[in-house]
Structures are given as structure tokens and as C-alpha cells.
Length: 526
Image 1: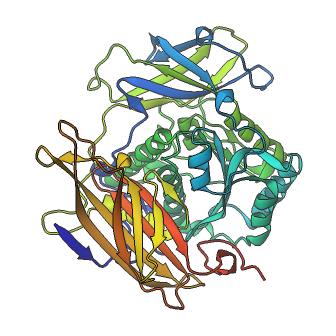
Image 2: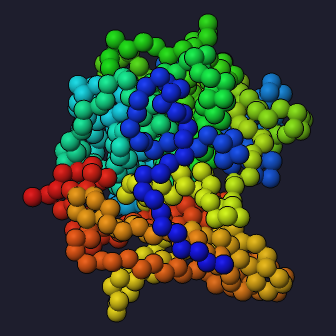
């Protein structure tokens, strides 16, 4: 079955209505509310829980050289047996191996840890944004010309998720992108709903886009994130939707091996995050007020605040992203149904050492909803996935795409993706099928949308006898889009509808450095 659909720009599922905040808002990327939309959980494969753990001494210095016998793991306070432990040192990239894109990262260094630096222009004062940029430059000035880890630089405001520089190990390239980006003035506090939704959309986009890279991702978020929300002031249905959205977002980050470090550049004037009497978050990091620092704790990261040495906080976050242990254990005891959330505690036998990791995982995961119902209406989750992926220029590698322009008809593009990244279903004894969606959009140099088309298609391939693996290693989709001027950039997004996995990439019809597209976040080169 094949169906062509026109994709309406700017349509998003609704997380929280403006009325929930008592404010009027403009359209912004928003997270689905339906509890059935969340098909995400911590990486638990064949009953194996995998954790990234940072170990520090009483002076805050990282500790290397430990073995699995040095660790004790508790799930819901029940001791667990550590089956494996690996140091991040085995996956650190060798010197003089350049990386200039997501594609090169996945091809040349598929398991290395990476840094993703986020400039928050949502809820951060303009002067604090300037201090963040100054601090990044100060931190980079202390590094060599080749960065230890591949690093991506992005910026987020209410309307845009901007990839300022794709993965690179070049300090010069990061500094150049920073100089070409001019931050906007953030909206006032009465735009809380926009800020909240845009921050969540950014976190989800990073999780979905980077899911195809097996290595650990260290997200260093420079800014205040979304405004603090007290669920007591929300209606019960909105409160439930908020809780479901938070669980989905944190689980997506965990699945993608993303650890969030929040660095507030506001200095000593900022209020500390909400903690218990011991100075730590409770078992449920979102049991009280919902604040952005709790997101860091939930993913195994840290929240830095109330300090003026932001460059040192960036350095500490980057250091932790390169110095961790990957620990695995097989849960024992209680069934999944008995308690949907399992708390995790990792401690060291040496009482002078401290382990930092994620706080737990959810065992029950709703299925990903169908892309459309029997009447052809698209699900909220489907619309959100494609809309958020279409809005930016970020490369999504959960389903790697190879774009090739037809040599004869330049309006035809061939989009190739690996069959191994698609979940196939049997259609008889000699064939498998999968439902795929492809969205194609084109833009002019200034980012104006010129064309958009969505195709939902069921793709079938032959298989070998007794196997569900297609005989072909790739599957090709074809997109037709007008490329005559003023078209300057084409965006391709592919979704595997059964799993919700996404692939996305761009084809530039002009030199990308000449674009004034706000989605790039960069001033055109002159």
C-alpha cells in the first residue's frame, strides 16, 4: 500500500497547553502527551543492564584502573552481580585521526565517546550567554589544536535547533562556528510554555539523532534549560502528561547513552536546585518541583551552578565524558510487573571513592503506535518525530542515509539505507516487509520552505530460506523535489514506523557557508 500525504508545516503534538501555565504562547516544538506515545526505556537487552559510571575521589579527581571487584551494584537495594566492566580508555580516539562529520564519526570511530556542547538561548539572559561563549573560548584556549574527543556545537532558542558545527576534533573549527553565530535575545519569563517545550524538544532531538552512534555522548548544556515547574499548580491531567513526557525524555537519553551536564553561567546569584537534606536528589528526581538540573541527575550527569569559573565546569564535564567505566549486570529477583521503576545505586568498596551514574530504569514500555489509523489520520508521535527532525539540519544516524542525486534528472534523489537498521516482519516464507515514511522538504538560502512531501510506503524484500534477514544489504527510496533556484537546501527524513527509528540528512544545492538559513545558526561567509 502506498499513500502520498502533504505534510503541514508547523503542526506539533501538544505537551502542555498555554492555559496550564496561564500564559499565551506562540507555536513551538512540543512533546506528545499521550502516555501510549512513549516507547522508550533504558538499555536492557536480554536482561542485561548497561551503565556508564564516573568514579571520583574525595578531591573530585577521576579514578582509573579499577576492576569489577571494586564495584558494588544494588537494584532496589538488592545486591547485583557485575558481569563485565570496561574502561572508556579502550575506546578513546588515537591522535591525528580527524573527524569532520557524523558520517565520518560513525565510519572511522563508531565506539568513541563524544561531546555535544549546547548553547542555551531559551531561558538564559543575554549577558549570561555572552559569558558562556567567553568561557567556551577560554576552555578551548587551554586545549591543543586537536580536541581529545569529537565535539559537536549546537545552539537552541524557542524557534530553532541549530547545528553550528557537526562533529569535529578541530579546535579551530569550533571557534570559527562560535564566532559566526550571533545569539538572539531570549524571551521574557511569560513565555514559559514555549521555553519548556523547546528545551524538551531539543533533548529529544539529540537523543533521537545520535542513537545510531554506539559510543557514549556527553551533553554539556550551557544555560538554565526549561523554567522550574511546580506540579502542584497543574491540573491532574496536565500533571500526568508532564510526568509521562519527562519519563519518555529521560529514557530516550539513557537509551542513546547520553549523559547530561548542566552548567548555569549566571554565577553565584543563581538559586541551587532542589535537593533533600543530604544534598542529593531523592529516588524519583522529579518527585517534587520539576527543574532542569534534575534531568542531569536522572541521566547520571551533574548540575554545576553558583560558580563563576564556567570554563572549569566545562572542562570537568568534558573530562567526565572521557573518563568513565561501562558496567553491566543481570537484574535478579523481582518481576517487571512488580515495580515498573527500578532504582540503581553503584558504590565502591573503597569508601573514599564516589560513583556517579543514572538513577534507574523503567521496565514496562508501551509499544510505538502505528503511523496512522484506519482512516489515514497520523498519530501524534509520528507527526512529532518527523516535524522535529525536519526542523533542523542535524544528521540523524539511527538509520544512516546515503543521498545521491540522479545524474540525468536532477530533481530525483536516491536515498539508500541499510536493511540491518530496519525491523522487518515476515510476509510469507520468502519475503519480509517494513513500513517506512520519507519526508522531503526544500528551502531557499534564507530558510523559507519551498516544498514538502510525505510518503508512507510498505517496502518488501526477499529473504533466504529460514531467515528473516533480507538478501539485500540496502534498500533504496526515491524522492522527487524541485531543485531549480531559489532552492538551496533539501532535507530528507526517513522513519522506520515499527520502531520509530529515524534517519535524516541534508543535500546542499549551494555552498552551505553562504546560507543565511536561521536553522544553521550561522552568519553567511562573506
